[in-house]
Length: 103
Image (cartoon, rainbow, N blue to C red; front, side, top):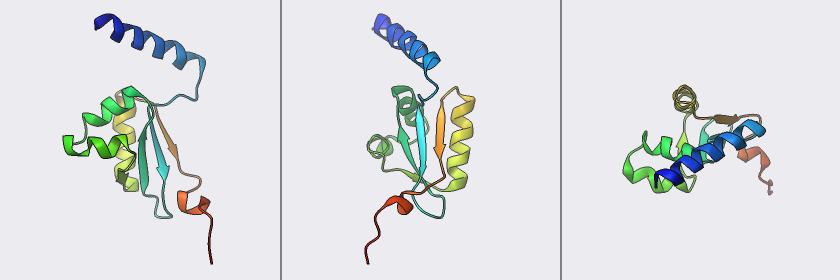
């Protein structure tokens, strides 16, 4: 098990240094009030989120069903960044702006 963990850590470091697009957690606007959806995009992001949310919320985290206010999302982003987690906040466009409008 230690060899597998070491290999995964080493692989992540190699990939991370060759691409700036990799992130551990993505925060995306879901409405015009700047509420954000959390999406873990790596095992490191998911593990970090699991240490900050209750066990009952892990399934919702893994299925991208957790929504935070703008302030809570900013605090989460700051805390994760301090822990070495790469967070990307996508705030230019909300999901509501992208969905087709029907009359």
